[in-house]
Length: 79
Image (cartoon, rainbow, N blue to C red; front, side):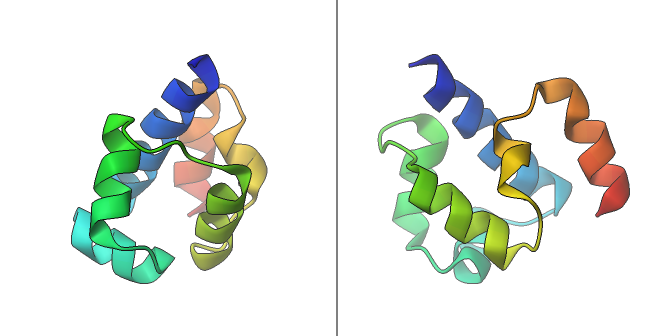
């Protein structure tokens, strides 16, 4: 659905903001790289639990995933 699309984009944005490969991102987030890859292309659904885990590992608020995209700049500047 639409929320999944947003999560997909946010996940990829986060990885790009942090300048990480899928492998490096997966290692920090503690997910198999195949899972991250599937999440990014929408094959695997991204759950609230996944988001919480990722947010915690990267030390930011989970609400960022739910925020409108125009807040991405705010997050980047805070990082």
